Length: 152
Image 1 (cartoon, rainbow, N blue to C red):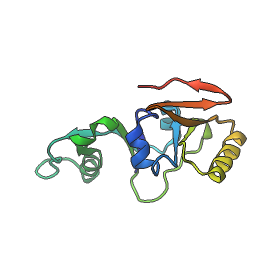
Image 2 (cartoon, rainbow, N blue to C red; image 1 turned 90 degrees about the vertical axis):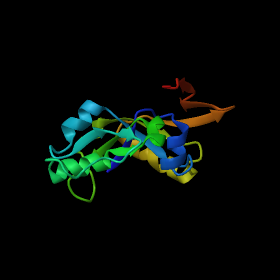
Image 3 (tube, rainbow, N blue to C red; image 1 turned 60 degrees about the vertical axis):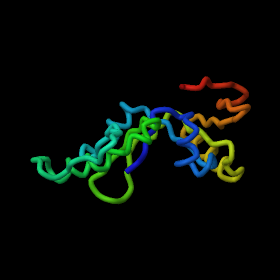
């Protein structure tokens, strides 16, 4: 199961899922990703509720019950506006086309060694890499001196 936040510049997501701003976000073209994934993979939008999902007493398949459970969080997480990739078995979720990725965002605390390695790998695939900058509670990303606007 992978997490797909709707926005790349949501600070709580960077804190929770990107190791306190030391990690990265991989931005995908949804249409290209869906074409590249196996048919039995599901990209589902998270539901945020006060109550847990009801999975007993209905005619849903085991798979649909599992998806319902994995795609539901308490309403306290609603700011994430997240999507999840659910795969039928444990293991890697692989796609065959690197063109699914259109950009990689690095956190401001990424280690220099990791940044160098990521930049080299993405350069070989012709995928742009941008790095977050935080200034007076404002988040921005830069690439070769350019500023990218926040998506909020």
